[in-house]
Length: 163
Length: 163
Image 1 (cartoon, each protein chain N blue to C red):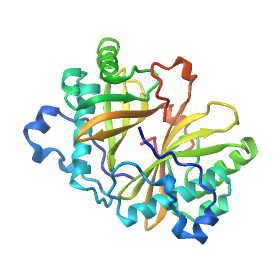
Image 2 (cartoon, each protein chain N blue to C red; image 1 turned 45 degrees about the horizontal axis):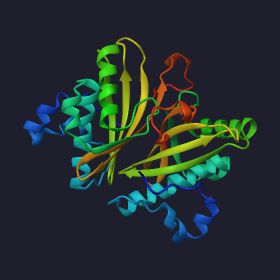
Image 3 (cartoon, one colour; image 1 turned 30 degrees about the vertical axis):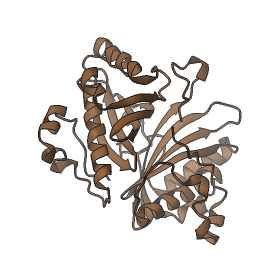
Image 4 (cartoon, rainbow over the protein chains, first blue to last red; image 1 turned 180 degrees about the vertical axis):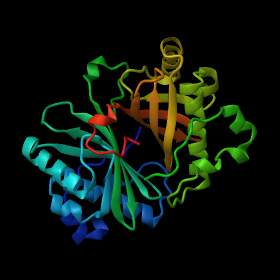
């Protein structure tokens, strides 16, 4: 099993003020990795971006990580940076307590992949999400996701959980 | 956009007989990558395993890629290699024409991530899936996935599609 469960990031400002602490020990992968410095940087940037947009629900903070485009593949969201603004506004209004916990983050070249447990209403089982981001020149420019409701673990055919 | 759309693998035997052709030109990522030889090998193995299990629906062929365990996180599947056998049998019986097209494959350390368009019944929109596999010593030992039905593109708020 993956031994490194990532807690939600404490804050983008923390990371920006103190780059050395951007990857505290609990985030260190237990498996072998050979990420380049650029891949590690991409992963760090995407996790900060994600926390700003989805947990802090702060579009202005999140927008600093965006390039001049944001190609959106989630069919429920409008394209472009303004589409992200609309989504963040929707979260802030309809699901102010929504929290997305990054369970694991992968990096491969220009792509960062997040495996996420999303809970929009506290106390509910929430959803499993994989978010895929593409970067260009250190900026997030494209996003895909796949989302699945988490069902009662008592009904599952194995005891391993979805993460 | 990702410019490399992977067609379903032609056949595991092809890859095994001709390792040099394991990554034909259409699979070459358009983005920069820095995968190690081991990561490239993991990606190749997982794509062969996936094709054997999901497209050929040949458990015996697929099982050659498995380690001594197969930790299953999909809640609808039983744990272990026998759980995979049951799932392949289910596909063969209930969805004999099901095809899973790997749109993109990522590798990071011991993990391989597949972004897949799955169509169980020809002519239907199918589902978007992200499958995550973990390897140990060149064998597949753990699996997570997230699955979402694809809805009518006419209802989408952008024109980019889910892939």
